[in-house]
Amino acid sequence: PFSLNNVQQAYYLGRYASFELGNISTHSYSEHKFTKLDLKRLETALNHAIKRHPGLRAIFKDGQQQYLVEVPDYRVKYLEFTNCEDFYQLRESLSHKIYVTHEYPLFDFIVSKCLFSDEEPHYILHISFDILLMDGNSARLLYDELTSLYHSSDLQLPALTVSYRDYIIQMEKIRASDLFIKDREYWLNKLPDY
Image 1 (tube, rainbow, N blue to C red):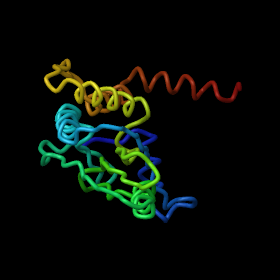
Image 2: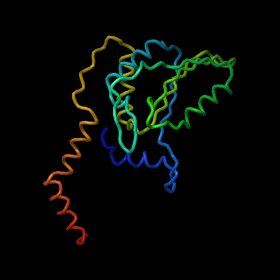
Image 3: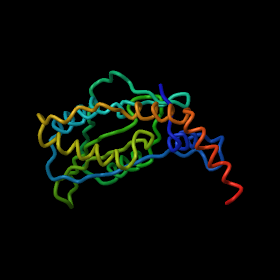
Image 4: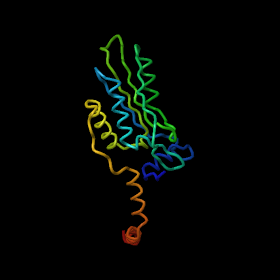
């Protein structure tokens, strides 16, 4: 287990009703429309990303986060819809989902095949995740990697040598260093002049 950063702390604590304006989960939901989509290739790419990025295997418990070493292969749920109402029900449930932070996974990837009478058949990839897992830049990186892995399943991405956990632990060491403490005192002593 390791510490949450300041933003994660706010998101984590904001989930609790004991805070004014609390009882809110930070969440991302998006839909992507395709005329063709290979479910198996998507699932393979996603499982590669889950193995590659420990942050996708993160859970949050007792005010800390930790990476699960092993998780079962993720199965992308597949649904077919012939009427809009059932599709909209799925959209509503995913777009407002609140994840249990100490349970894996803190995301959903679902593929809907839409067979509505007034439209050409198409697929919708629903992506839902708790923002505790990743910021916007990390999500963009994930989507880029998923796209590359989907189109080239034998793609060899460079090994990751530093994790977010490494960064947080190093940041804590810096914040506890004599130099940091000295610098903080310097700036705190400047406050009366501002």
